[in-house]
Length: 85
Image 1 (cartoon, rainbow, N blue to C red):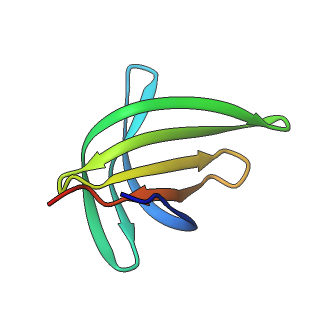
Image 2 (cartoon, rainbow, N blue to C red):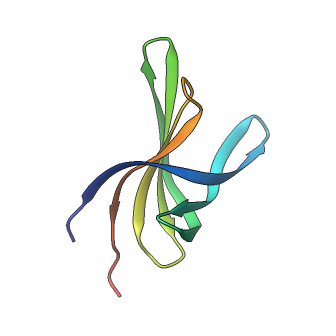
Image 3 (tube, helix red, strand yellow):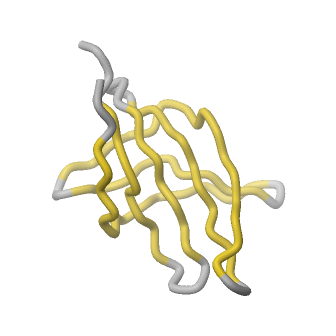
């Protein structure tokens, strides 16, 4: 299963609770994707700003990497891989 780099801005519905946040749904190319689980999360610095990354699996078993860039407060779909049917 090849990984495809995307780098497109997306709309994300996220939950903020107990000082943490995580994405729950996102919209990409006019289609809504519900996130079934978050497999990983990490952060890095972009100068004085942070970029938060999330490795997620959709309810259709596709894998995505999303990121939130705090400089622009925009979410990006960085890459994806379609799961096996």
